[in-house]
Image 1: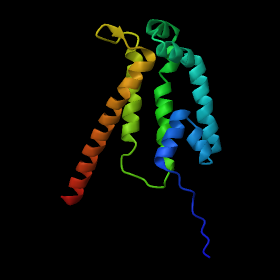
Image 2: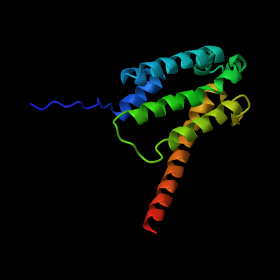
Image 3: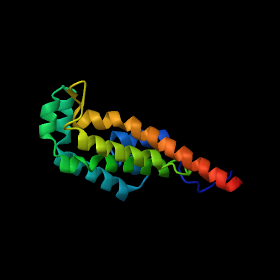
Image 4: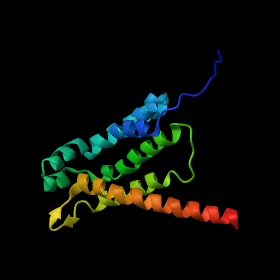
Amino acid sequence: METTNKKQHYGKLEMILWSIALPGFAQLSMGSYIKGVLFVGLEIAINVMANLNHVILLSFHGHIQEAVHQTNYQWLMFYPCLYLFAIWDAYKHSDGDEERFAFLPFVTTAYVMTVGVIYSPIFTISGHLIGPVWLPILSAPVGILLGLFIRRVLLNIEKQSIKG
């Protein structure tokens, strides 16, 4: 019987989903307790200071203007970056595989969602205010696609430089 000291591997999707549930959960499940507690603590602090849970409730009930008034934007602007960084960190440290430029979809999504937060008090579609919860969420796919596109371009440039 052969024994090895193989590092426990965690599936990328599993860790991403734990991190989406609450930033820091993936890190805690992988044994990175200091980082996990830090992410959970920062998430709770930003959530409370931004009044995010109340804003989410108002948004889900369709009270978008009230959600805008209840939002502390100075704190909410930190949320997308913390959220996506925790997800990226979970992705990076799971499964053991490292992919070139894999961080790009996470980074661009954080940027685009932060811009969504900034414009959420004034951005409308067909005269309907989208608000501080829905506009960042709806902008996430744009950030993901932008990051995937930039990653593909950089990988192609890198591949061409190796060939030539």
